[in-house]
Length: 81
Length: 234
Image 1 (tube, rainbow over the protein chains, first blue to last red):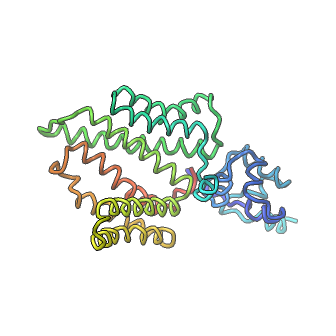
Image 2: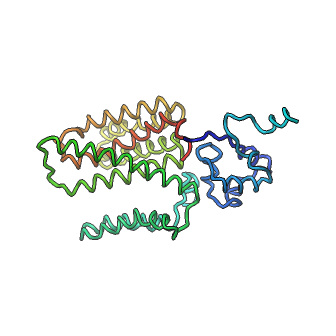
Image 3: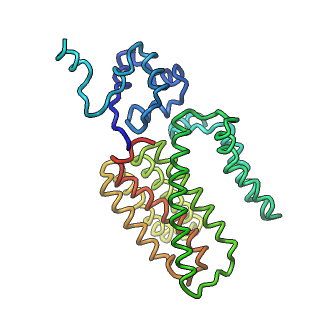
């Protein structure tokens, strides 16, 4: 069964000086088309690629990808902390 | 050329370009000797075989997964059609004039299902359907121009037939469900309008191959648009 995944790639690119899709693609070693598909939710990346994308932004993988029915991580942190 | 590739979001690798050249070359040379058709087979399936063997690493994981998913779709469609065809042929006194054309039908089904599914994965249902329809519209305009370029009124009337394709292309972007239903309806209409169900126009296999090329993209895009939410990831 396919899993609905929410992605923060677009927002993180914006926060990193509007990093282009081309730049991100070059950093993680995929095509720009792959980044577009991930941002639009048409493709769920492999664990390896998800980790490489998180490393490119200097964050944890949970900050980039989450289950669609899960609350954003910041909200959960606020509740617990 | 690079700009055009950027615009349509398609960057073929060197192996893909060589493969495409072999496919076209094979078909052209087959006019001289049918053995050259093997070149088309090598061009169409060779790069994929090399990638599966791990000897060619020119695609990233998204492209590989899209190709594998498209392969599965081609397997499902071709398998189902094969059983329907066996039932149809064996259930009555039906003799194929050119049984070897069966392989053409299955190759067309395999390849065009694979191609359509790949496009849907790469562009998403809305963009892929929209671009396929624009392609249909442009092809129709070119045929109209070639057919009635000496008769301006006839050219205008023929060209008007392309208008629904462009309208549907715009509709696919905004209202995918409505466009999906219309595309399937259009596919069914074309199927009966062009008499693909009878053998009056051509043989069973010729009709089927033409139906795959003409009706297949419309119905395939329509189904993809209707199931857009369920088919979000390759």
